Image 1 (cartoon, one colour):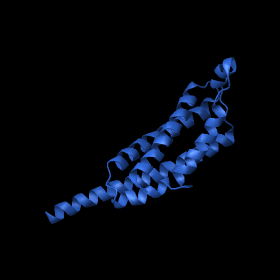
Image 2 (tube, helix red, strand yellow):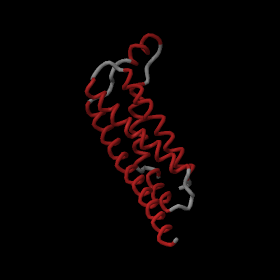
Image 3 (cartoon, one colour):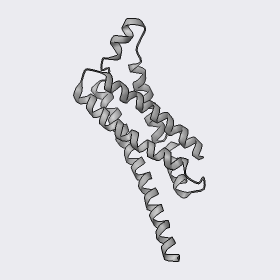
Length: 150
């Protein structure tokens, strides 16, 4: 998978995650669940920004990019997270007129929705963390090899 495909996948997730964060900030109900979603989604948002930045700066032949690209395959972790977010966003999209205003401020997720979302977020956070750790390890190794050969 080329870097552009991974970047597009991550950008889509950033946009969808941002919608969930914005919705959670605007709602008035269910403060415990809302706070947890805000914390977890915001944490993942930061990791996705870092991942996107590294992918954008990476050589297409880089072994790290080859390994990381597996995250963005069809039915892979990023794709599954995207599907989960799209399903939830479908629930929060308001209707028309006055109904739209009232619905935008009401927490519409069930405990099961939140549990599923938090599981997906945790899974993606773990995998992105591993990918970022691999990049750090490879960078450290290349610097070490430079110093040893110099």
